[in-house]
Image (cartoon, rainbow, N blue to C red):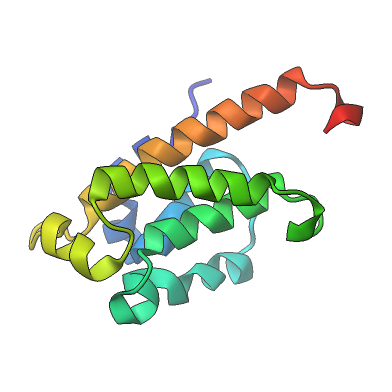
Length: 148
């Protein structure tokens, strides 16, 4: 059985089909790709992060990715380990290198177009996020449960 990848789901036009902002697109796509089982009330939490929290601050794909890391790699609360902090740092630095910024306003100036909106940004984010998640899941699978 071939599962759709996070990238494939974003590339399929999820944002347009479901009328989602960039943060929502990342969270909804990860929920589907990784079978996270997040209910709609949890998915709605991403709504306020689109458009850099509506004020063109931190890009919504970064916020969405952080929510995905939390859903996948936190057992109970963030303070239990530095793992999400490390994953966020890695993701943000990679995205800063690709996009040139982490704030929505300058990213939109360079990357957004009238036809696809911020889809190119979402695709880059999906690609990087998928690589990190797949690596982390492989590492978890190779580590005995007691050591995690």
